[in-house]
Length: 325
Image (cartoon, rainbow, N blue to C red):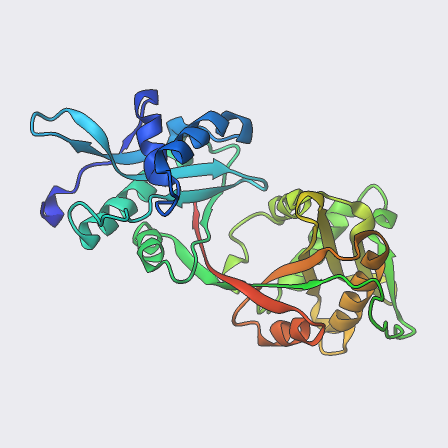
């Protein structure tokens, strides 16, 4: 098969759900067929619509469809985003070689995104993908389908200690208040504050402006379990200038550092370190022994060094890619 004969992706019917699922589950599982059946059975309960899958099809000599070659599955998430998953290379190797497979995956991704842009305009604004950095086959496919690389994310963690860590005192004109204390306009206040913290950010700056900040805030609330008592605003001269947002995930016994950001007027003064010390101290009573975790842009050297200084270590790396719909 030449590059000029790449099968055109199609939106699959229910008769192909299982075949598509066989390509979308991990190909290294001991029983791919059973994993595929579990995906099909559990999809509706997880908000997954397999009819949104776009795939290239395998046909026999008579033209009869006998399976799925490559597939792309979008899963709607919070904040008007969709996470996009694609078929892995089979253990036995690609049917027509790596380059044909790459072109097919890119075509499936593009067809899926075009479908979302036409049919989910009210609920989705951005498609995103987080392949592992070693998955070059996936990264190349997403880039080939018009996705923008917005950085490589390091995933860091440490255990929350019952002793906590020492907490430096705040400067006289700086204080910390609960998010809930901001009153009925707290979301609007935080949205404005988030925009301030994005100015000259070192954490995935390419994302700035890709989504409405109100959608970003909605995504922050949907990470784990939103608990307003664990969201804090730092003020300078009684004006909000930074924040630290923490969400617990009881099932995983972890607390996610969803966001830590400061306006320029508070940077370089040790405030971020104080916020982290406050976070770990405030978590020790109810969440001792849990994992404290975050994701950070590999290029954000000051943040990485700060997280390392409080005992956090890297446990995973992923490439972050997005495409506006």
